[in-house]
Length: 131
Image (cartoon, rainbow, N blue to C red; front, side, top):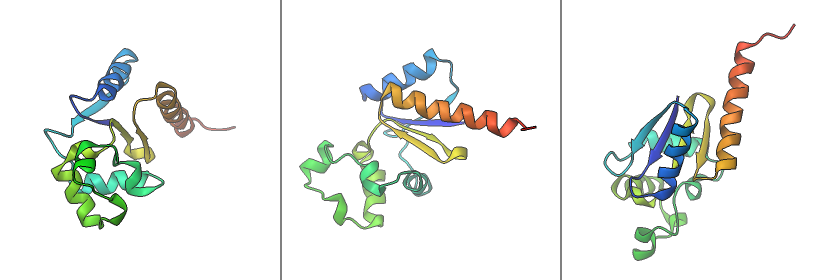
């Protein structure tokens, strides 16, 4: 199942939900503002990104700029605390397919289609035998 981590005020999050609804793609939506991520969920996200913390934290986030936070200098414990206490620092939306260990960050329709195409192709490969 695909999980989509969203923020209610984020336009990109709204667009992703509309995209999934329009294409009748099943998903689980998680509002990260009202229901912040757990340590386990943060670890999961970090496992799927190729470049670490910088892939999921927005250096353009107001909180990051206001507090002059250099994410490169934070310990992992500080990163986890930052995400849990200030979830708006996360890039959004975050689309995760756990069973395929895949992640898509942000709204880009072409990238989402490729992300989903890989899901469909993998499902066919899993269910087809080669003679």
